[in-house]
Length: 450
Image: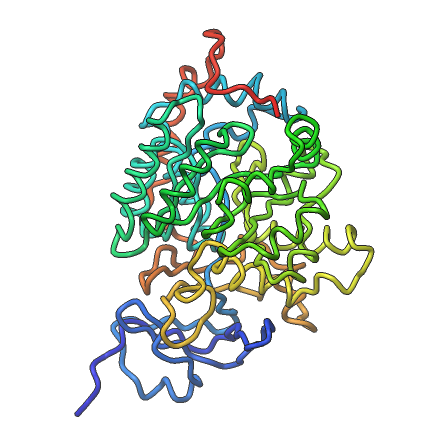
């Protein structure tokens, strides 16, 4: 009996592979067979010649990587790209960002999410973890454009119990939506905006409903020191005493994680991960970065992220990968850490694990969802290739991504977006900008005072 055609076969490419020891390698002149949105096999191109498929992509000269995961962002904040520049953190929040965010409508969030998804798809991101407001609009955009997302409705204690309840309701209603491409989380903003009672209640809801938690904590050293001075505990110790470390938790940033926090994270009974977005830390002139090496030694995955475009100016995870490798060399004083291969591991499998999808995506292997990007290395800036991992991390750019595939569906082919009309989004955004940027009302959604 002749087997039925595969949905997609990608041929004549080099495929990034993972081993059982957190290493990466490359299979040359390989083919990827995709059926029903899942990788069925990685075989030689010669073997693939005998197979039939609904669609074939000749990826000669290209490298197939697992789609990148943006482990912490605020996608709709692309609307604020460049409006709050060259400011310390407190002024950035209080004088610009939180006043402007008080103007946000659900339509603004939708348009921002649409533009952000277009930017991420073009940059090889196939999944993002978002933590924002009006997340029904973001979920609708995700379903429409075909990307994968891990979504949470953010809340502050200043909203009263309604904020926490809305976060739970969103998580339960959208869990498993978009054909399984949407996973959900509870999303308290941070220990400095959500009190201990709310955090403890969130931990209980997470246990009751088998939900993870995604929040900011120990974002920078000032927050950790302010928490110690005011409350006698670090933000990480707050997470422990409120029970959040007993469940699955994704901590955004963590550049303020102190040595005293490391045993707490090591002994956490839940699955703990950290998302690192190094470009923003440089912009804010924070004195420390995410302690990737110390967390690695504890077995805690560190996923790569961009944060929102209001602080990072881009949603380029490729840049986060390169910066993480470089900054870790500087921070540790060791040119052997991180290597390019380690950086690729962080960008792929570790990032997938950080958002709880380590068994579904993050590698190109049989049984994994077919979230795949094809990277063109024929440009002058990537030639010659002596070390393929180093070329990918330190020479290639996000603009070298030619094709982006999620669940076996092509979302971008040869740099052409297939699911989002960017010019239409930009036109509509332009009409809404005057009202969105108005700060004359004197309101803000929250006070930054750690």
